[in-house]
Length: 510
Image 1 (spheres, rainbow, N blue to C red):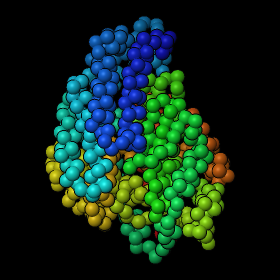
Image 2 (tube, helix red, strand yellow; image 1 turned 90 degrees about the horizontal axis):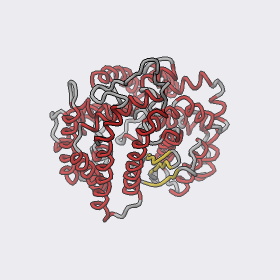
Image 3 (cartoon, one colour; image 1 turned 45 degrees about the horizontal axis):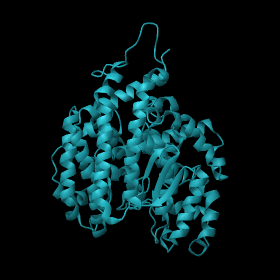
Image 4 (tube, rainbow, N blue to C red; image 1 turned 180 degrees about the horizontal axis):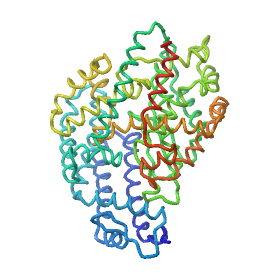
């Protein structure tokens, strides 16, 4: 039997490449957290240089010769010897290395360097433009990044739409053709449910969430919840950034960020829980496989399922607040005095169309994603001009959610993704929502006392289950294979739709 030992020379090369990528990621993390404003141009050159070196090493002739010993570099077919098969980890590694190699080989190294540099610069301009509420300030950079991403799609090749080439980067195997009917099914159930809620006589008061809350105490409470979830601060950090994110350099160094609004209790708390879900996944990857695809997450849809599960299925549940509400009330006694956990539970689950995606309730959240999915397809396929984005954004917000942004910061500039070239990323958020409920329902089947454990503050029961079922496997299995291993079926929107219909039907007396 051929094992990972057989391809040791290959994994050594991969580890070297990963260390370079980790260094570039560390520079990116610093750029978003502590880098002085004047360091932007130099930082862009540093990051792009490292990413260019990593790319050159991945497509180098000696790497291709090494890979060709075990796999056909043109087709990806694994070479089998008579009577000596590959075991599953080795076969999976070769499959995924070939995927990464074949995609990288299509991209010229000078293009990779240029794209990296321009995205790094664009991120910095986006931050300033958002602060100034001025899309025009960001527009030249967006034009540059968009042109480069269209070029990337042409280099990679695609069927039906250049958008599919970019989508495949984040959710392997996914296509517009597969997503459109899925999204239509979700929209077909969510929009009528939203209308029923808006017509309901039930009134939910959430004003207690918008008093003045000390920012340091908010951060400390978020940190305490992260510890309860099992996030290991010996292998992680919590910092502030303009847009919350998680980054990992190794399972022993996984960092999350949040943002704090003095007059919004939910923002810091739920971004901590959300990013903590991502952080647990990255800390739960098997360090033995670091540097190889087996030590990396399988897809952004699966990754997002972890953050959304913790944020919504757990963090917005009655069981969670049975334990944590008394502590939150003690932390902010003046603001939350006289309230009970049921009032708080209703408040944090209030359905109210909102301008900001990351602060949207779990029902309307997917409408934010569908809006972005449609816009970025049109951008990549050339049906929309970048300069028209603010108006298009506002019209779609009114169509989908019935509200219109008053400025670019709460409209087209609210998300960082397009600045760093992440076209094709947004659909993975909705896929993550669907996976999250499907996985959580399976966890409750296999751990019948799960919600009792959560109500007692014992959150690590769930973390352990996720670690065994999802985190430790890395890219051993494709997203669909992993879903079928964990739940016995492929991705199915019905668990999510039934969950929100039941939860909000009860809250709003439908």
